[in-house]
Image (cartoon, rainbow, N blue to C red; front, side, top):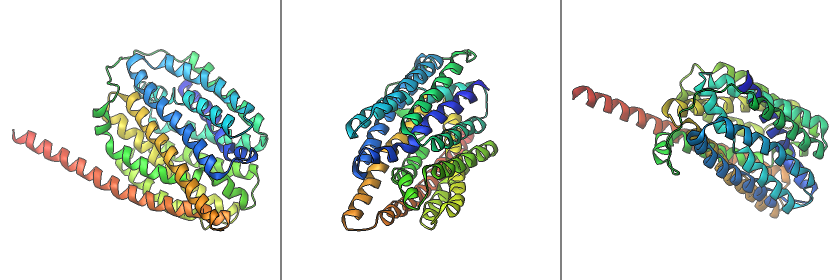
Length: 377
């Protein structure tokens, strides 16, 4: 249960902060376009960190990088307390991103090496996310939320200190692992397109909910419904093929993003969060299974997946901020402008779905032809 505890508390710490960053930024006088850049720079720091330290975990071992990343993450979250304008908030979020990107790949590789089921392990991240957002929503005091994030991450660090050592095979991985990228390209590109669309929404989603008349506690409850759904679904999907999970999750994403535009109050928004939790649970577990089953460089391949998510979190907020900024400049009401991001995300999810189906079938067809050729030889 030690890795699950790390997963639970680290995600509680990560998402307690993330939920209220858009609202906190608004209180500091940050506009939508500036918010998009702040989120994009945070995601850039995550991208760099995931890429570098995912490879380091394969080359130098998992436990030390895991422990160092958790400790630095705990310290970095405290810097958000001292943010007072757009620049200081940007610096704090960059520090948080660099530290948070250090440990997830090492943790997932450790879990796979110990023969645990990826879906069940990943589900504790969703459970931690749910608890973190619910408690943060109840506190509704920004400095308290950031200190809470730091506390949760420090608890994860303490658990990592007593993690059971296992034999580690240190691999030679090039700085640019083109073979790893090529093996996993279908899932990397599909996730990139789908998640970029999703992130056009997430940068403004708390503001969208507040404009519908909800308070921060209601927002926290909705995020908890999403996380709780993920926890349940992730417990159940390990037995399914990775390609089926990814395909289903991406297609359901398109329907989910459209459903956001139909909900007009707290009760109507609950089913959309159940759909959202289901689609992300299947995409994430399916993607992890896909890369873990096809690679010995598991930390590197997981780090690349996390880097793909970070790239999406760079492009998506910039696109979302641009869409909203242009719409508002033409006098369109803010919540109507927010809905434009949801339509864009639905289209991108459909593009991702078509691409992944096509790429997966080509890969499977190529493998069958290779087997038939080998059999004739």
